[in-house]
Length: 108
Image (cartoon, rainbow, N blue to C red; front, top):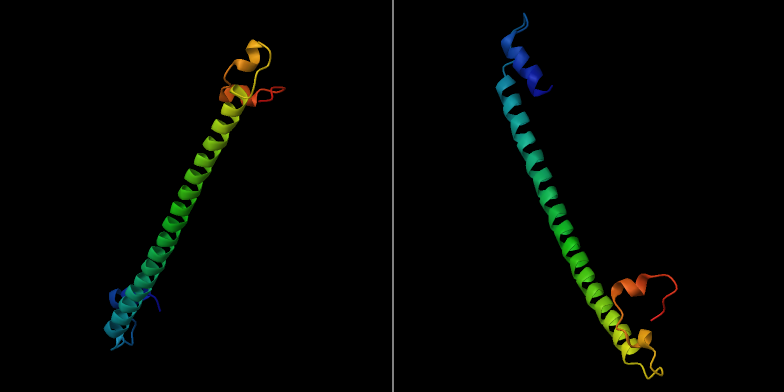
């Protein structure tokens, strides 16, 4: 019997009357509900902590990859800009930008 059915028994008692232990049943129902709510809250808090930890790990990984990507980008740009004498070719002396790296047919 759920809580609304218990309340309905009190509001509209049957001919046999309200059961003597109706208030005990209501108290047990409420206490059981509180325990389920506490368990659900504890589970949710545990899951939130896991997600925050996972999010922090992803953020750290992204920062590491960005730093690694920047280092690679700088080493590529530095290597092609000062890579040697091309005999006065102005295009090879020009410093590359990130847009230059993504153009098709352009090799650093």
